[in-house]
Length: 357
Image (cartoon, rainbow, N blue to C red):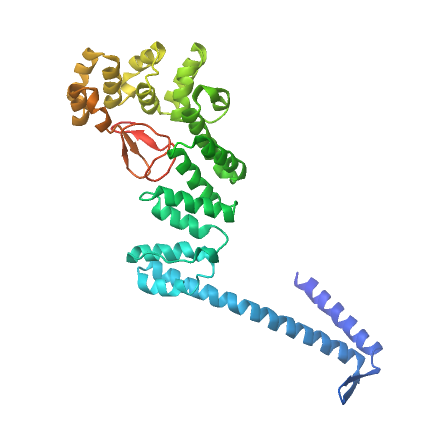
């Protein structure tokens, strides 16, 4: 490698000397009332050097602003991650011309208990609206929806805004809009996320369209919602296959509880539960037996049940809405009935039965 570089340098030097030898004649340069005579090869060399210097200076001037911006950002991040939030606010506030800095700035203000005051029309990527929508999601879903719709009006490529908005639409019962957004997400999402997006579509179709979407649901990945639909809707042979899948995926508690809540139980399902009782949580079995009026089985379980379940069994159906049998594995929020999307953190397919896997 060194020998190659030496040969290359020698060749370049020889060419330069030959060029100088053949261009010893003088050339005259005139500017206003001044003139200068110099060998042609020196003129070419000087032009080359001057061009290189000007290009270098131009590059340095352009990169100076970038280096300065980068240093301010590093400073702000260092203050943020070391817990010096007031100083971080000061540093990051100098960089708010860049919309991508706003989420960091809002995060710092949250730590200080301050409300962000931002001029939304200044930005065009929809990032600011998305960040603000996430902040107000729980206390003001209508404002969050308006912000997200505005974000997508500015920049349809904002996938984060699309994901939040599809979940809000679903929670509001606007299933068609939610499914349309989900189909667009499935098309535009990065490859590692496509399987998760397909699972979400399966749950959406199962909950929103039921048997009307059965053929499409069968082609999508299995989720608690879609398995519950398939088990309750397909023929006996396929039903057995999906009951077996329920156990293979380890979501038998979730599927049986969904079917019980929807009163979609069949003899094959009850038989499968009875044959695999040890694989179900006591709470799920108790709720199933209570709904089927299997009082003897309930008596056998009663002493092993948590207090809320025992209260439900003795209190009757009027206590059902107070019975929290579901918990979001992502945020820990309790729910009385199944939903594929957590109304607290908007995560999908994360609800698990409480008290047993």
